[in-house]
Length: 93
Picture 1 (cartoon, rainbow, N blue to C red):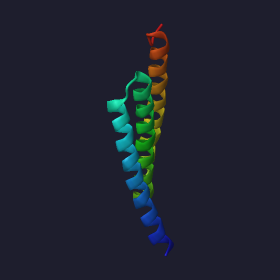
Picture 2: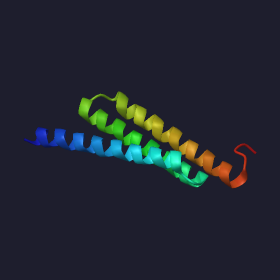
Picture 3: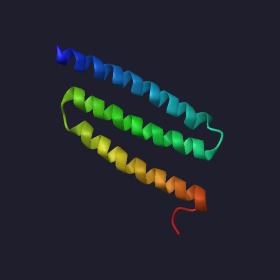
Picture 4: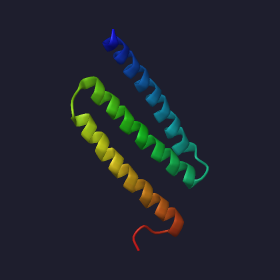
């Protein structure tokens, strides 16, 4: 019984995360300001990371967890670089 509940909950989580990716993409495309687009990009990489984690839980392989870790690190660095660019106008001083 618990395996069926786990399977359904992972499926529902993946559907909800897919909807969150669609909402974040719409914010990236329709954001009136650059700050809104950066926030949408930040939300998008977090939800994609969570989708990969749910795929890893479903399949039981480690490759999805490693890919989620890489996306998390690169997404954080990208967000910091874009925020620094918006504040100062340049990334490398």
